[in-house]
Amino acid sequence: MTHVLVTRPLESSQQLAEQLDALDYSPIVMPLYTFSARRPPLELNSAWSLRHSRCLAIFTSPRAVHFGLVHILDDRLKGLEIAAVGAATRAKLEARGCEVHLQASTGYSSEDLLQMPELAANPGEAVIFCAPGGRETLANGLKDLGWNVLNALVYERVPMLPDAAQIEAVANADELLSIWTSVSALELARQHLPAEVWEKILNAPALVISERIRHHLQQLGAARVEQADGPGNTELLQSILRLRGR
Image (cartoon, rainbow, N blue to C red; front, side, top):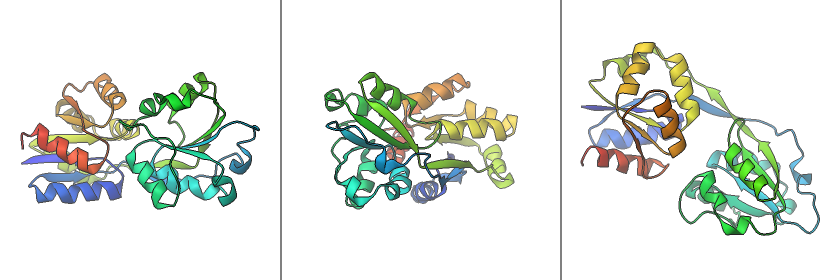
């Protein structure tokens, strides 16, 4: 039986695990971080200060919406142009009653958003809602287009170390496939798993959600890395079935 190592945050991992169970895979749920709120070191409601320019709020994930939207006053929100990275982020914004003005027609990465021609015209001030250590590509790309950019660090990752049962499950798996949706999870696994277990993961097939994660995993020594059809659990499950010829 194929064991699937799922390293997403707990709720997403559990949802995917239930779907894998139903298809006779054996999931190993090993979330490597959770999230906590962080108060940004800037007053967001005065961040968009230039007159007669575009005021852009960019939400980079559903978590950025959850942790970031509460910092924007309703009156200020009405005057903002809102951009979403990925369909899940857009859905979260719309569920909160926000109109989304910009989202790449295809893809779900910072690079996809930066390709939108609307961002190259009449740049103004942009605030990116994100976690520390992320979205440098997006910030630098916007600056190159002439935007004044501020990062609103509204949440942060909190590491969760693998426990003995999770480590044992990976060590004993006869046939293993691992799923990676962030570089942060990869680095936590590399640092905290026993060397022989980490080596086993590198030697097994891996599924990732972006070219950046694929490159990072290959740099760490993995040889069999495939990119998923998308970032959500539905696309991950479809990709697993495709890889297994089902």
